[in-house]
Length: 253
Image (cartoon, rainbow, N blue to C red; front, top):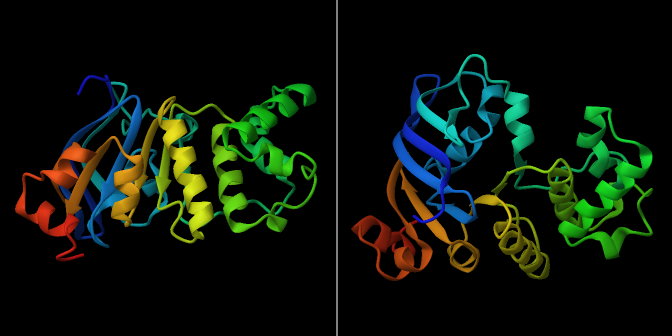
């Protein structure tokens, strides 16, 4: 792997109560490009994704062991602020979750938490985030309208803009297009590819074709374990493990 590692996972094991969801996963995610997590439902891929910005902290009974390093620093030390981690590591969820406020206020939400931006600075940063999310031209005349009036695909890109507004180093996507129509899905995939040139992007997807289209590297998980992690072209065309070959060829999952 030529790029330096943004994330390094070592012996990561996750539990919900007494149930082990992820067992002894070790891998490195480079600082640039798109990494996809694939595998059947319940294989642990979303759990691992949420470990990368400590979203599992809010789940009752969740615990982990092992290491999750972000730029070489353990994000699970007692002195690490989870909010600070989430500022660096943004997340876009499966279903769009715009706030019940205007388009502008949705994107400006995280910026206002700092309480240090003037109105002009807010306007510039909101526009830049909407531009980066490929949404500016569609909403520039509707910034004060309620976000719920946007289409499903637009709402998902609005959520991406909200995440981008605070300048994260990493963006996590948890099946961002699973509820969208094919045209909206294509736009989200184009956006993921573009963002991967600037940021660390990790995407969980059930859609194998989507992983093959957008990801530079792909990790295949099964029953909470990492089975194979390789460049995407290699994993899909020349998998080393029989379980990987069976999954990507559609024999199960």
